[in-house]
Length: 89
Ligand code: HEC
Ligand code: HEC
Image (cartoon, rainbow, N blue to C red; front, side, top):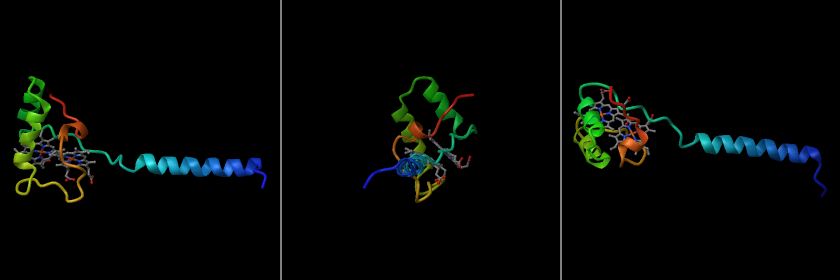
């Protein structure tokens, strides 16, 4: 079978659609860390040079079973601050 221009065009369209689907999967946006009194002290620690991992351990003191649990469908749960942007005021 000989491939015509139309065949190539068709293949290109499919490739683009698949590409968009693959890229947009897994890019559900993670909400930023809220700038409220609960979070500000931790962001301050981070800005003052405490290690990210040390600060992330504190997140779990609230975001675990009790308190403010994460949704069951929450993505892999370690290293909060890689996904959740955090800014100090
Ligand atoms: C003192 C308790 C506490 C600590 C510590 C804490 N959180 Fe929270 N967090 C909450 C509560 C309660 C909420 C929900 C209410 C709100 O939005 O303020 C929340 C909300 C959030 C949200 C926003 C969710 C949304 O829907 O917008 C993110 C993101 C978040 N926290 C990430 C973190 C990260 C990352 C850390 C560690 C650096 C952390 N939190 C530490 C109590 C805490
Ligand atoms: C792999 C990336 C990633 C990591 C790591 C991560 N999150 Fe999330 N988080 C997300 C995404 C994406 C959402 C939005 C989920 C949605 O809208 O369904 C989210 C949502 C949240 C919410 C809103 C409520 C909820 O459960 O949907 C909170 C609070 C939160 N994350 C806190 C944390 C904390 C605390 C940690 C560390 C223990 C953490 N996240 C680690 C990506 C991440």
